[in-house]
Length: 154
Image 1 (cartoon, helix red, strand yellow):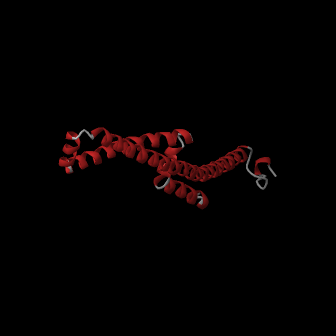
Image 2 (tube, helix red, strand yellow):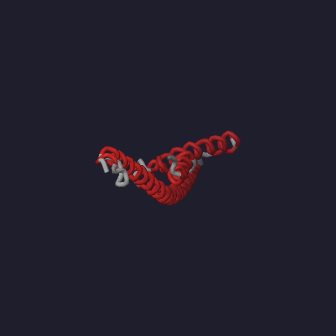
Image 3 (spheres, one colour):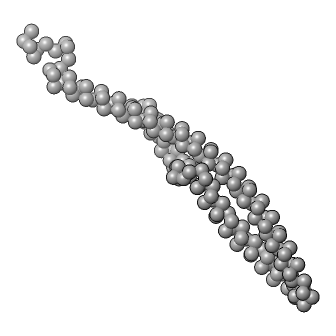
């Protein structure tokens, strides 16, 4: 016997697991601080690599300027400026990363709560079905239902 409500609920759960739930369910493995920290570390690495690539490209593009700086010993002030720019960019991106992944974690937890509620509902449906089947088996072992009096010879 097919239960239409159970099928709808199972379909809803499967769609969630294949769609937006894929990332949200991974989020369940972490606490909020761990989730945010892992993503901040990833961002820090990406920021550093990107900044180094940009500086390298700028140096290669303006080789003459940097050679003049090297000759006139203004390299230290240039290095300090590059470091200050890096620190500012790093701090700004880390703050943005913290806010984005904190909000994302909270949103994913809300999605997962709905998913968890649907799983509980499905579990209860299965338990009701199992209870109904067990009661049916018990009735058949005890001699049928109340309308079947042939067992007692009436």
